[in-house]
Image (cartoon, rainbow over all chains, first blue to last red; front, top):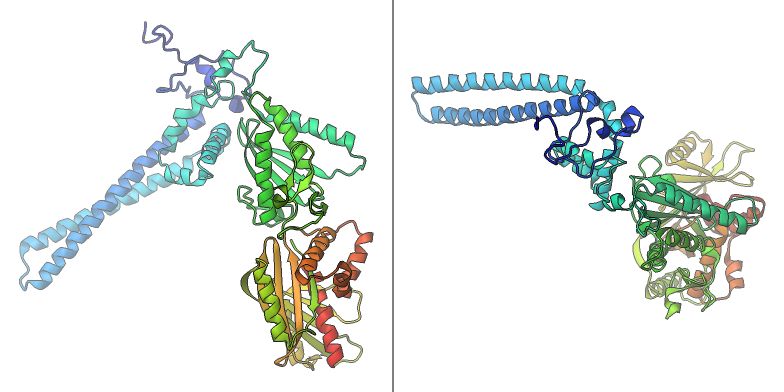
Length: 368
Length: 212
C-alpha cells in the first residue's frame, strides 16, 4: 500500500528512530540520514519524545485559551461601552422605557456570562501552565543554540524574538529536522565531501578544530616563553556548532580580546580592559563595544589582520593561528614606544598599529 | 580602572590663581580636551577632643560620589574607604563632642575634561572663600596597572606643561612616590582610587600645615 510505504513515491521520510536528537536518549541513531527531509510533516515519534509533544500540545491549548480570553475581553469592552451609552441616554431623557430596561438586563447577563467564560479560561490556562514540562526545554539545547545563532545574525535580538513570536512552537517543529547534529542540511557540501581529502571549507562542528589551533598556539608559546607563569589565557565559548567566541586575555597589557567566529572566520572583534568583566559578573554582555578609544582602534586593527591573514585559498586554521600570534604581540601594549617617533603618546593615544609581518608598533599617524 | 597623578600647578607666572586656571583650561581645550562636568574634592579634618586620640581626615571626590575616604594622621594604616554614612557618623561624633572641626573645609573645585582615554580634573583650591592655588589630576582610565599608567601620564604632563621628565617627577607627591616604591615588593600592581585621595591629602594637608 502506497499510503503505508513512504518510500514508494520517492518522498523519503527519515526512518522514525533517526530523528531522535542524541541528547535525549544518549545513543546515536542507528539508521543513516536521508538525502531530503520531509519538512512539511516532520516524522516525530510521540512515543520516543513524549515530553516535547505534550509540551507542544499544551502550548497549542494555551494559545486557544488565550484567544478565548482575548475574545471575551473584547466583547466585555463593547458591552460596557453599550451600557454606558444607554445610561447617558436614559439620563438625558426624562422617561425610562421598558425596552431600555430589558436591553440593560440583557447586557448585564452578557457581561456576567463573559466574565464567567474568562474565569474558566484563566483556570484552564493556569492548569496548563502547571502541566508544562520545563525540564524538556533542556533537551532542546541545539534548537536554542540555533535560535541564538539566528538572533546573532539579527544583532542580538534573541529575547525580543522569543517575546514577540507567539508561534514559536510551530517554528521549532519546522526547523527541528534541520538541526540534528548528524544531518546539517544547511551545509549540503557535507554530503559530497565524503572521500575528499582536501577541503577548503570547514563543515561540521568547528569547536574541535579551534581547540586544536589554540592548543598549537599554547605549545608554541610555552617553547618561546622562559618564565613559568603564563601571561595570557585563551578560552573558547561554544554558542552553536559553527558559532564560537574566543576570549583571549593578555594579563600584562590588561586586555580582553573577544573574537566572534563563524567556523574559523572572524566576524566581530571586541577589545576590553581586563577588569571591566568584574563589574558585570552576573549580567555579562560581551557584545557591548568598549568605552576606550585606544582599545576600539586595536579592535579595528585586529579585524584588518584577520582579513590580511586570510587571503583566498588559505586554510582557515592557518589564518586563525596567525591571528592569535598577532594578538599576542599586544602583550606589552602600554609599555611600547612607537618605532618612528620614539614616544608612548601621540595625540593622546598609544602606538596601536602592529605591522602584520614584523610586528613593530606604530602610531596611526606615524604610518603615513 | 584608573591610574591617576595629582600635582600642584605653578601659578608664579600669573597674576592670580584664577588667571592661571583660565590659561591652563584654554590650553587643554585647544589641545583637544572636551569639558564634561564640574568636579569637586572636599577635605574635612576632625580633631579629637579626647586626649591621645588621632586626627582623622575625611575626603570626598565627585568621581566617586558614593564613597568617602578617611585617613588617620601619623599612622601607617591605609586609607579607609566607606560609603557616605561615614561622614554622617563623624558628624554625629562631632555633635557628641568626641571630635571637633577647628579648621574650615578645604575644597578643590573645577572642571572635568576628557581627552582620548585620559580624564583631566583641573581645579582651584579654596578655603573660606580664599583661593590658595591650582591642582591638576590626570587619570588614565583604560588600565589599572600602576607603572605603565604612570609612564603614560608622565609623558602627557611633559607635553602639556612643556617641561622635562625630572621636573614632573619633582611635582609628584610623596604619597605617590611611596606607592611606586612599595610596588617593587608587591606582585600586585593594581592601582586603587584611595591612592588618588592620598595624593590630594598630601597637597591639601601640607597647605593646611603651612597656614595653620
